[in-house]
Image 1 (cartoon, one colour):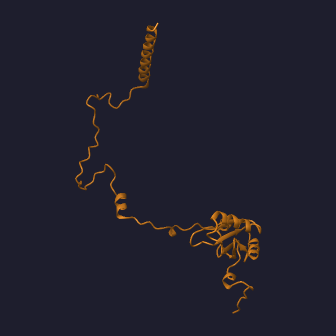
Image 2 (cartoon, rainbow, N blue to C red):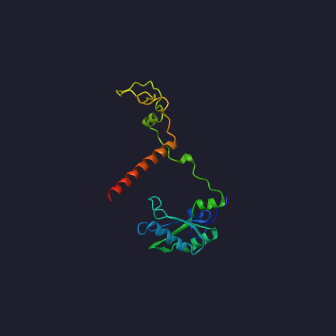
Amino acid sequence: MATRALPHGLPAKVASVPPNQTLYVTNLPSNKIQKEDLRTALYMLFSTYGAVLDVVALKTSKMRGQAHIVFKDIQTATQAMRSLNGFEFLGRELKISYAKSKSNIIAKLDGTFKPPAASTAAQVEVTDLQQSIFNAPLPGASTNVPSRGLPPKPSASDHAMPDASAETRGTKRPREEEEKKQEEESDSDAEMELEDDSDDE
């Protein structure tokens, strides 16, 4: 079995990752600069070698001091990696290699993007209290559960007012009657104003 000769100057870990459009940058200053300023500075630095599609620089404890730069093609990514590896950036030497996996942006562009599976989402535990609330009977439904010192619920039947007759109960007065009543009230108000004005003379 023949062993592959490693390129001179590259560690075995770096040489085993195939070239792709995404570069993995480490040894970035993490506490000297804000995240957006770091992304802008990285974009300005790497875009001199070709079209940069995305710069991912997170300040989480796991990703602190690291970034991913996504280029439009492999050639410009390779050129940027060769030129900027060891470059002093904000007081620290950059360490650049190819990313192990394809970026989501590249996967979306070439149609191979697969959204994360629902099984990886956090599982939600349902407590006994939540179950009792969700499985409670509907309001107004009869239940065989004895009441715990609460007064009985009033019956759901409709109670008529004592002065309401069967014909007028539940019917609305026609709109014409309302308009006539309002006109009569406004006419009587106008007559009273006229009478008040004539008395002043």
